[in-house]
Image (cartoon, rainbow, N blue to C red; front, side, top):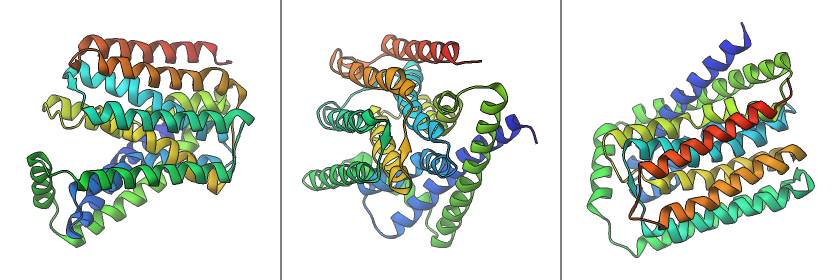
Length: 318
């Protein structure tokens, strides 16, 4: 089968598998009477970032570190520039106070740790453990903080919708199993196609990871955010994308490094890492200037992503 078909099939199976995993995990969490906050912070975050996790770990184990690192960096850039940009072009978002002063600083801390650990061009196991500990600590902090606050009607309504959608434990287990199987085979096929294309086209691995693979693994966030924007569900906000970026760095990269040390190419440090840090930093003024992130800011974000991809592809060696 041609590499491009393996790539397309892998992307499709990853997206479908991620959807099944989230539905099944949320169903099980509901049966266990977990709160909507805990479900969102743990189960849903893991589910939407599971494609990145499976692809990165698989790439590292198969000695394709460029794809592993490129996937994390590219997904984070895509989340903030592409996904957020397209979302607010459809429907402007109001940024909550917690997103500005708690979630964004946590994302920057994770990003800076990533930058520091990658200075020697190697993410070691102990550094992966540090990232995982940071993620766990941040999640525990948010859960404890939320317990001091009363539940809002939106959270209660979300729980009612979840309970109506998935009341059957066997059904939830079935969704979970299908999701895990889909993610496993999807990551295998995606990696097979991406590596094949890179080798046949003479492209560097990290370029494929930053573009095709990163876009594919960010597809669940893109689809979910666009659908929410069309339905004008403002509760699906920028905070979700920031949380995804934190999870990508701490859980995806952290777990990958614990499984196998990840090499970092110097070209990534000189360019792509700086793009990720720059876009992450630029997000703060976009959030604090004005009452919301409107269409003009969305156009700037989307334009930044197009510029980044254009420069990346043009600089890639044929």
